[in-house]
Image: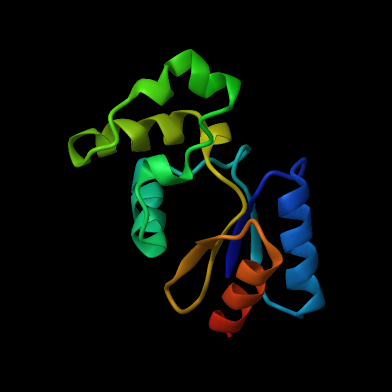
Length: 121
């Protein structure tokens, strides 16, 4: 299992605490320091069953600077969104947990973290 975190994020800290309490084996990826490339983002999006705009933090200052709020949310624009997330990892929703069963989740609440732990065993 791997969890993408921003240590300054309370939801990330909560998810890590829940993983620890459950005795889960996992790797922490500080994705702001070690950003995913476009291939990794595509793979995680496939595992999530989501599109890049679904995991984009559109309220971040960088998103506003890029004008992402006005970008079309359609298949033809998918690579543009993925490129923006790779270039500006702060825009990636967090935390994201990839489980050993091949699934992944944006684990912003306790129930999702616990479900991911259960699937990852």
